[in-house]
Length: 183
Image 1 (cartoon, rainbow, N blue to C red):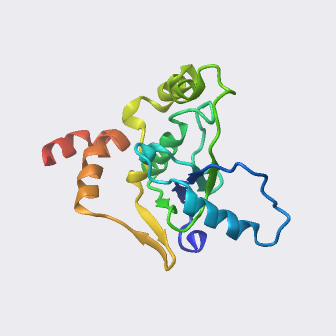
Image 2 (image 1 turned 135 degrees about the horizontal axis):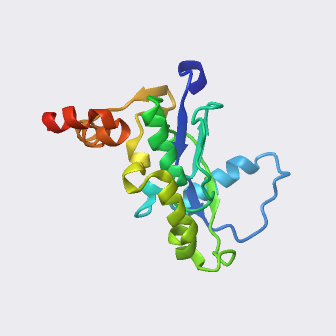
């Protein structure tokens, strides 16, 4: 749906976080439908702070140009992707409501600092620096479009317009003075 309407794009979304305690049989023909039902029935999607979580992203080849050497799976690299797409005037499309992405809950034993270390540790701090600081971190709330069952729709509420006006100097520094005068 998106590629037929947009030449360049970034699709983002949130996933269902769910416990999967038993082995899942991926050889069964209806495994996807059963997993989707399981996630939506027993999982969580809109937990506090999740607007900063961008659990998946799909983009056109070559969209970002050179990407800083982010540590993937750590904080802030995904938020920079939204900033970068907006700075390139590329639609950022929220597909949360039409894509059922599932994230199996897990511990953080793989990281010496545990969950907090993975989210806010040295690698995350380096990602923040590579992203250009907190001002260059955008969330799923900054999307410009949404995918519905009917297709891709441009979204712009008064609240979003105010937010975009506030964030324009970050995306386009040359607009800082005109935006300041407009405010």
